[in-house]
Amino acid sequence: MRPVLIPRSSLLAALAAAIIYIASPAQAHESPEEFDKRLTAELQAVNPEAADLFRQANEARAKQDYRAAADLYARVQELVPTFDHATRRQAYEELQAGNRDLAISLARKATQLQSSADNLSTLAICLAAEIASSKPTQTQMSEALDLADRAVALEPDNPFSLSVQCQVSLSGQAFDTLRRCVDSLKKVAPKDSQT
Image (cartoon, rainbow, N blue to C red; front, side, top):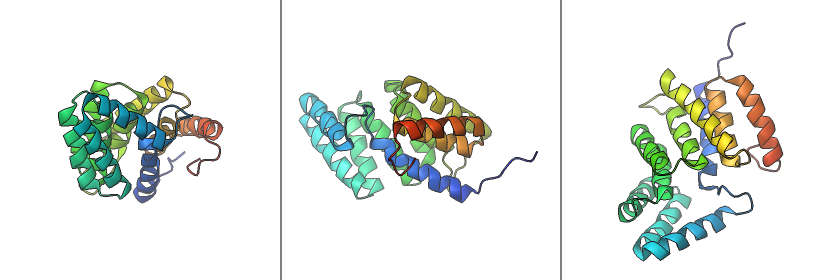
């Protein structure tokens, strides 16, 4: 049986849709706004300047000003080097700005700071992403599939991780995994438009 080839443009659209979950909180009961508020409060307690920059970065991200958001998240990370959320978000903004290699590097850094499901999923998305100047190698795609699986194993009910696992499985043509994660995503987020 010949493998089904999926157009890269369709995969890019699917990957971009999955990225929407980047800001999603790990806790199912916490809205993205509550998650950002909690993170900002954590930063405020450590470094008020970093908290203000984080708010500005989130505003730039909401306006899809990828360059400004990435630069602001970088400044947060300089002030509070252990704050993996800024590094993860900077990785995504760099990916959106077309800087795939830098995005991968930043996502690796976030994962080294904290091996969370969100960080593992973000690294998986960065590795699997295809942009004009850079495409995933077979090794990168294999790593992306492994990272997505690890993220879901850490947090089986995390909609972001499940969505990433589905998108990476689609991109990597791992259709058995795709079927399983779609079924899981339907249970975890049945009303979500990505499901």
